[in-house]
Length: 108
Image (cartoon, rainbow, N blue to C red; front, side, top):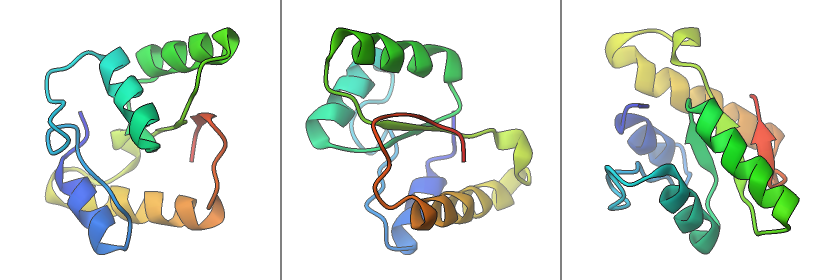
């Protein structure tokens, strides 16, 4: 799981970001999280490639609404307390370069 502090760091950088816990979805299954993101027109940021790529690809194939899903790897960033700000900066830079990401899988 990504650190909830990353959402706070993204918010400080001017993004409307929520952690799964802040959104009231802590402990919910991935399909519910995805459906909520679709309803709220949010971008999903996760390190859970296997499940969210499958959900995204299945929804695309079925012609169902989709959202951008951004996959990140924590191991590409510093550990400990430096992780959240580093991850937020990385996503902020990606967002600036991709202001209107297409629904589907992204690897920044």
